[in-house]
Length: 60
Image 1 (cartoon, one colour):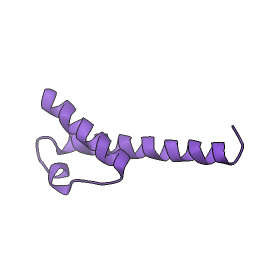
Image 2 (cartoon, rainbow, N blue to C red):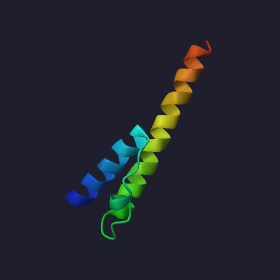
Image 3 (spheres, rainbow, N blue to C red):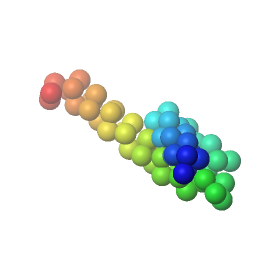
Image 4 (cartoon, one colour):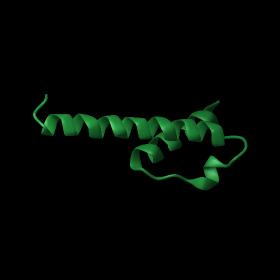
């Protein structure tokens, strides 16, 4: 279970940074956890950018 959380967290950090580690993503044991974290990280980064755009446009 700990390895799954480590893989998820690695994906989360990579997703937020906008990069992807293809080797981890294709790993048969931990790749799925990494890819879910990657998606969550990308969504969080998108929401952060949208909020910044909204604040800069004076809608906040």
